[in-house]
Image (tube, rainbow, N blue to C red; front, side):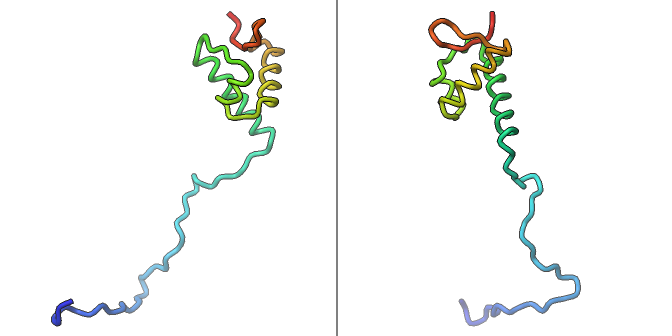
Length: 99
């Protein structure tokens, strides 16, 4: 600092000053969904993946890794989709859209 430079001084508050507040972004208010809504989200994602990737025929283990859910839950979900008629299971244990 040079001897002629002004010193840092604290500014006096005026009636128009606004007190600082924490930043709030409403779109970032994340609320954890219930188990049923999370299950519905996963099911919707699984359906979309099968529709978007024609010819996609994973095993339960492959689908569980892709959808990041445990293999037991994935097997139940895929079996439910087979019962609904959305998917079919091949003799070698793969799941695919009906042709």
